[in-house]
Length: 308
Image (cartoon, rainbow, N blue to C red; front, side, top):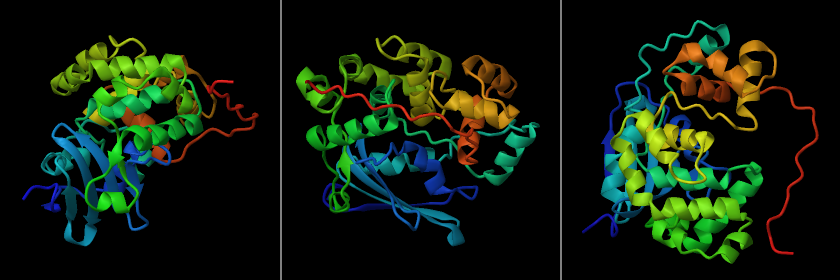
């Protein structure tokens, strides 16, 4: 009997106090149809694995020093095998000893946080493309519609909990232009998504490459730039040095957190340079510490990409 018919179980004992929900939260994109976080810290994921769809449920058992997981679907074995890396076991923070007081305090408060490494490139790439140059509200709405219109219900109890598995690259590559427009996705992003879907198999192979080469190969896909590559690498590859240059908020928040003054990408690059190869680690610690610059300006007006 396979994981498609019954739930498979795994108990993992990490060698550090692993904050499961905190480590996995970076995989949630807004009100994500493929991610659910329960009030008790239980994480539910709908995953498109190389072996098929899976529902993965992960719970920390802090008192026991254990992480308990269950999975259903054809990809259940794969998902459970990837559990330690997904929860941060392959992240190596050794050598990260920040002297900047803000970063040092954030690290002290979140010393057990680790970067996830899902090993799933297209899973991280498609949402990143949909998030390009639009508000989070627009991007997350498109992602929900994409999962529900072209994906499938998550296996096992995932469906009962409203969980979906994102569509396969083949399905994404075949979505016609008018369907993208109905989901609020403009032609620039939909064309990039289709191009990425057509080469998804080759992109998955960058998981075994060094991060510089992975970055180079990602950016050979038209429509994938510095920001999109970084967003993929720190989720799929656990790249602790992947900085989200080009983001509307991140440079402003990082520069404000480290200097008290709002700066741009160039300012952030200069400030983060001494932290190599842990620049993303600093970016994420700023987020975890909720160090965002004050916002006083008007909100962006949401455009529409729907036909008139």
